[in-house]
Length: 108
Image 1: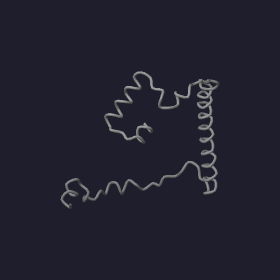
Image 2 (image 1 turned 90 degrees about the vertical axis):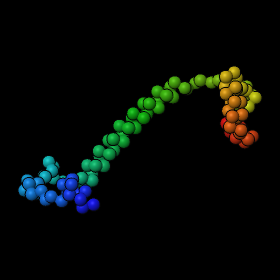
Image 3 (image 1 turned 135 degrees about the horizontal axis):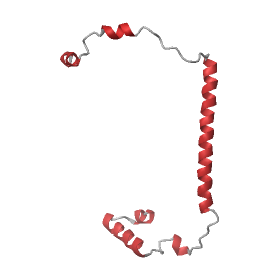
Image 4 (image 1 turned 135 degrees about the vertical axis):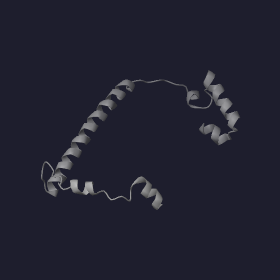
């Protein structure tokens, strides 16, 4: 392990980097803990509000598409009795292929 660390240079002391880091970083605004907390709460609330507006506009667009659309269907449509064309053959082939039992077949 020591050879690996030495080969990549981890054991060599870097004196240049210690000499150049003498200045401390000062924030642009100095605030107390309470001020930072209120600032972050305000920012968080503004983000939540903008997300809510976006979600509301998306939801209203989706609801406008699907609202007031009624499809009258027969009881067989909701039961196993209604199987049409290609969907029926796909379902039957899948039941045969995976050897589904009655409960699995009903759920499928």
